[in-house]
Amino acid sequence: MPQGDASFTEENAGRKGRFPERGQPVITGINRVGLWSLYIKEVRRFLKVQTQTIWAPAVTTLLFLVIFTVALGRTDREILGVNFATFVAPGLIVMGMMQNAFANSSFSLLSGKIQGTIIDLLMPPLSVGELMGGIVAAAITRAIMVGGAVALAMAFYPGVDLSLAHPWAVAWFGLMGAAMLAILGLLASIWAEKFDHNAAVTNFVIAPLSLLSGTFYVIDNLAPAFQAVSRVNPFFYVISGFRFGFLGESDIGDTNEAVISSALGLGLFNLVLAYLVYRVLKSGWKIRS
Image (tube, rainbow, N blue to C red; front, top):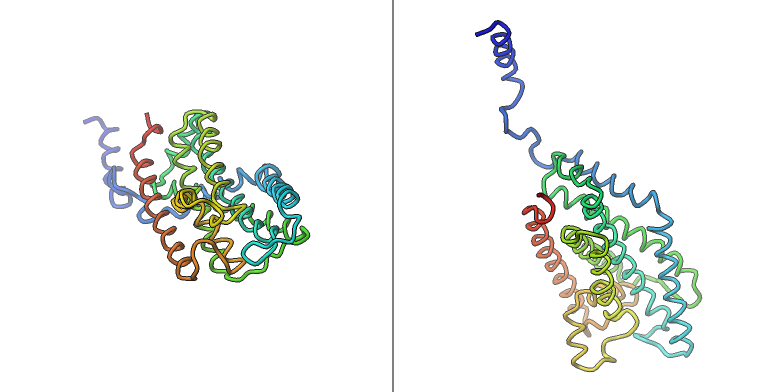
């Protein structure tokens, strides 16, 4: 054996006690540094253009309130015991949260696939769960910021009362709605191959489900067939439960137990949805060639 090879072997033997065997994972458990880095990267990405990602949705949502209040709320009629502006405000807040959670997570992987930088997300020592968790957590963060901006704008609108009747319902349904759309957005970014595909999901799936979920009306005013359709729409439970947190009244059911059951059902739905998206992401479908 040449002298150089012998010294190389001896050097490796000396390092054997300090370094793990080839193929043995060095990071065990959760890669907290990597997860936090991915989360901060995603948050900084949308904060760099916060005028577009945070404040513009607040203005757009406030315009919805102005238009519908002027068009439908001029009379003194009440819905669920409050005026129309107070009734519709919580639904608009959580609708803005959900739509922006979807927009944030649906852009993450799709932009990498289009720009050819997807390797920057796949190469770091992050597990599938950590990759998914970082993207979803950043989307929920954006949703919370948008919700705060929308609520701040609506608090100064005449006739709107944002007093909290059940803070737990506001927190739970707001987080569950944002998480649901963040997970769906991640699935859309896995499936989409160009921005047109992502826009199609937004325009033909997310927007109709949001607008036809009881944001501007109570489903008791609908025909029985359309009430049944509304009750299979998960967006309906998010918006009605979130509104229950402000008003103490909801069209989910006549009792608080119905709202609690809806809260638990929504949490279970998100767990199942997260598991399905996790399996799709782990399979590498449309991501790894």
